Image 1 (tube, rainbow over the protein chains, first blue to last red):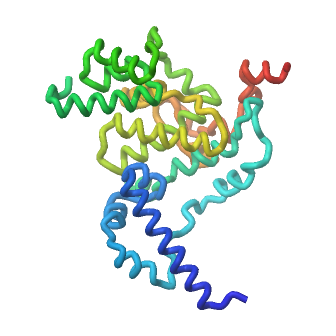
Image 2: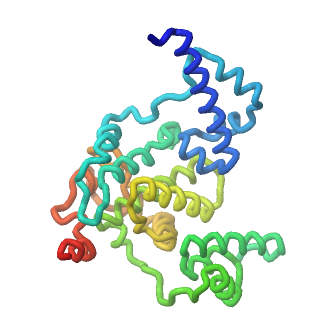
Image 3: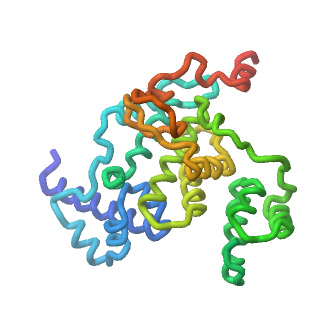
Length: 115
Length: 178
């Protein structure tokens, strides 16, 4: 049985690694990280500036700081069929590329709304 | 052309080296840097260890519209548009970063990247010239490379509705015969 307390510890740890990873990626290559994370400038700059103490404080919450990005069931069904055939003769996994295009099309929802 | 300062030149050289490593043709370097043809040629041989390929660049938008190249180009262009919109970076930097993301994704799914950096660069130029754009598929809502003035309100992408002979290239036919 997983106790509530255990779950909360795991949420905090997930928050912690997510924030640290995001910061690491943003400091390494800001633009590519923004694409990968699906963030826009304001949030990206804020995360880059966070001190370890601030990260600890933010992570210490009962809410997850990250969430599922693609609330489109087409993307999920394409990703799930990744391993399956529908391979064209060139050995290309059309499902995987299709999912990639959909994810790239909506990589940053806030951007597409503003545009 | 661009600035003729020493700092500007060193930036141009770094950019040229980056592009050569990604496999760009000489024409791309000539257009994106202010270095002379002779210097670029020398740089190319030093970095790539061989002479650059000769001949003209592909100039038609048709290649990007065929089935398999269209998937690859769409993936790249979506990444590019995203980088371009979300932050204030130079066009050529956005092309390089988007191309790296594209190659990385192809490696992740175990597919050969068939879009070269030169073609990717050309694609962005076609977009700038208003010849090519991204059109939303009415079925999957993904954005795909398409001609700008295609009159088609009910656009459905090649992946939602693959043509009968999709992906059957000469190479794959040869592989089947063996």
